[in-house]
Length: 163
Figure (cartoon, rainbow, N blue to C red):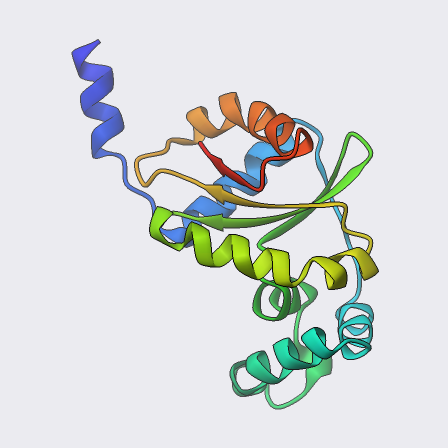
């Protein structure tokens, strides 16, 4: 028992690893990634005031990273930088947007951002949105074991879920 506690406490991940591990855990429970073109996301966002503002905020970074052309920006970057979504899945008939974070101090701001974007999310066909807080010492095995329960909590109405 003591050795497993030591192993868990010495395991540290960064935000990129957390996002990757969550995606892997989602795949393990047959949550399907939703694939939509960046052009579709952007054209939908442009139809709303909030969407226009989000595009204006993200544009300087995305244009500098992707050679000044929206056509070079991958859909995953549009989702992340414009909509604040790290993973978009279809699970049990629901389309769920997930914002993954390691920093529980950011949950209030992230949940507020999701509330502000809720009408835009609806336009995009997103049913539910969640801020998923992953502990820094979270192992892939822990995620695999607990991701199904976390999604059940989202479907039940929770907008912030701590793993």
